[in-house]
Each structure stands twice: as structure tokens, then as C-alpha cells.
Length: 278
Image (cartoon, rainbow, N blue to C red):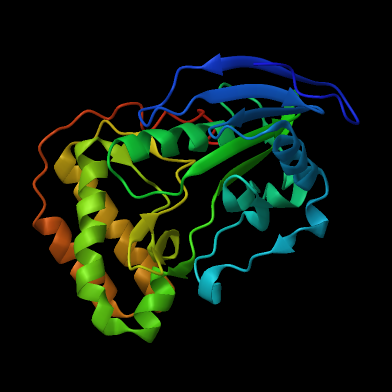
């Protein structure tokens, strides 16, 4: 593959990585100081425009967290990629006390946070989970870096919004949700950020799990993982004043799961020891 054009800075392709399970090649590149990985065959202009959005994110259209509940810390923008359609760009930001010091910066150690989520999403899709379709990931910086992830936009609402407006839809959705959580458990994957705000329901009623940057392979038994998912989900429901039926139906679905082991296929890389995400 030829080098990307040099516009406003140096740009060059690094390598073409092994294709993921769905056959798409992952192309690694450096564009104007950004380390990039692309899971879609974007043309040169699309890549450059996507990187330009990262450099001028203040001009991008902000997407408010669904319902204002459990929306997370990331900053999110929309962008149109002609060959892909609308994408969501997420900039990673710190929480806790560190947000007052270096909110947008992380220490570079092993795999950076956006690349970890990018690879986790590819592995999750290969394992049969409904997750956002990764388009590209980006990082910039040497010792300290900033990170972004671009995924295809999923039109719809969060599970929080759906439950608040149409509680009758919950039983069908919970069957699908607990089925997918069962895949995580059988793969020994702990999705430590799974809560009602990180579940999205598209306009066709298909349910998607979000935010895989901190998903890790766990040494816990399947039964312990099931309990961990149940406790964290129930805690989030109680903390944010959501209907109790959201917790009870989740617990009931988990109890009915068969937890035979299956292959994780790369999902859930171990995080950095300090939990910084790269």
C-alpha cells in the first residue's frame, strides 16, 4: 500500500496487520504525528479528514450522553466518513483525582487505551457479541499520550432511556443482554464497566454492549464472574435510581445461564498494573 500524501505534516504507512476474523485488514499508519490503526479501507482523503477532526475536535458536533445517566467520562463527537457513514469519535479522559491534573493524558505503557479497545471490539465481534464496529483508533504522544477511538454510529437509545419510556420492552431485551453477558463469562472476560448506561438499543431493537477499553481476562471461576456481573449491575441500578425490575430481570437471566468454557479469541487483554489504560 502506498504512503499517505504529505499534507501539513509527515504521513506514512507502517504496516498491514493480519486480518481479523471478519477478513478486514488492519492498516497501521502515522499521520501528522498521530499513530493510527484503520479497520476499514478508507481512502487517503478520508484518513486525513478523520485525523483533522481529532486536531480540531472543538469544532465537531458534541453528542450528549443518553438520558444524562451513566454517560461516562469520554468526550464524544460525530463525523461523517463517506465510505462508512456516520461514525462516533470518542476521546479518552480520566476520572478521579487525576482528572484535575492530566484529564486528557495517559502514561504510555504497553498497549495504549484506544488500541486495546479497538482490538477488544474486533475480538468481541468475532466471538459473536453485538458491539460497536471499530473503524479506527488513534494516539498521540510519547511518554504521555492522548487517545481516540472511531466506531460506526449506532442509531438508537441507551437501555436506560428504553426502560424509562417503554418498560414492556424489557423482558425481550434482557434475554438478549444476558445471552451476551453469558458469552463474556464463558470467555472469562470481565467487562468492568458494564452497566445500563453502556448498553445501547438500536432502532431495530438490537442490543449492543459498549466501552470495552477496560475489559480484561479474569482468573475467576465462571460462577464468581456471574456474581461479579450481578453485583455491579445491581449496584449501578440502585445508585442511579433506575427501576428495580432492571436488576431483578438481569439477575434472573444470569441464573439461567449455561457457563461451559469457550475460546476467548483475543478478547480482554490484561490492563496495565496501574490501571491507567496504557
